[in-house]
Image (tube, rainbow, N blue to C red; front, side):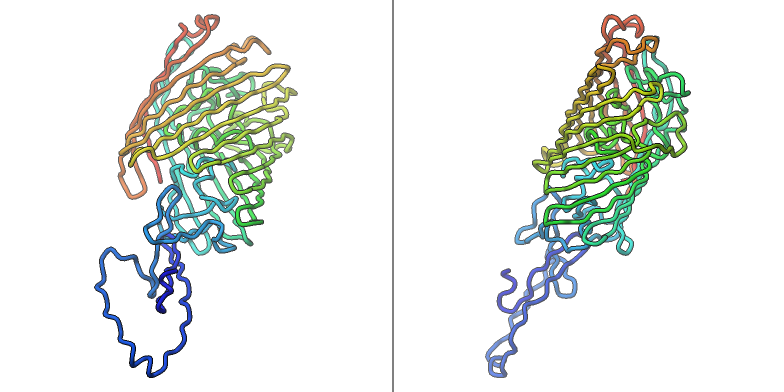
Length: 483
């Protein structure tokens, strides 16, 4: 470094909230004659814009992913983080701008989403973070209060609460990371029948009848998990994840974690094609990270949660999934996955399913202060000789407290007519568009108000049941967010 010249101390590496000074290069002692010939340099006046100094060292900040390093700085590469501290980027109490690596490997923490799924490195960080000793702690939460109106003979009105509260704690372990996560939801308070949502189906409210044109509530315990990783190279690691409940290695991140649509209070009608396994009562996942590629396999309890939403269920790890994830750039996350689910449906005993999924998630700042995110996903359910597909496109645009979001879906659904066992698949579709405006009311708390409008598409054979080919849905909501 240039700073090493003339006996000056070298410029240290640091991250926000932490300084990592490098030892000064030893210099030979000067003789008395040399001291006499050497005149001390005049001190330059201190400028207010100079970098912060700690004990004589100059702290140069480490940029976050997607940011540019300050002029003259030399940020420390991820692979050169100190062994035994892969997830610690150096963080002051309450500092949100720290550079941190993930719990499963040496890559930016923003890459990690629900379960062990990946998202773009440029995804918006949502957690409130701090440290306590060797532990890094994070909390994130959102509470939606929603009024829902679905039109037509199969529609209904309801006010309900949805959302989640998540906590995370991790620390160095060996040359890797030990992490614990917990996530709970208020949704059991809405009752076992959930909320009206045209063209949605799956699970049950009473153990006998399928929920049709309604979205089931999620369980109170959405995730109770632990993971451990060990680095086996500069950019590679092995990890093990276990949860009761948790998310196996299948599909994209769960819908309430995808940046393109997480601001919508409405569940997708494609939920049971793409990510219904995100609450599985018993999951063990082993994985290998090779720089931007992740390979993982899960054994899990394939039965979907029953109508009792407050308890923790148990069952044998009888199902298997495999997922390959690849983040070719910091703005793009790709995945393809396969799953074999044993007896997943409570109302279809003895019927196994095979599932396939592929998705692409994108996130980037398209202009100063403007953030765009998008999702393209496909899922397939195969059972009893049938292959039923779902297609999803999601998008959001954020600027100055405003978020505009939208989603388009097509599903092939055999459950919309309950009287027909193993009946025909009806191709139905939906487009929704909404917006929310957030206002900060405290350092880490905001309140928002928004709404959405949905237009549904049903074939002519179903139109009499829905009062026409294009029934509609609307939601108005307010929300609190901890971030």
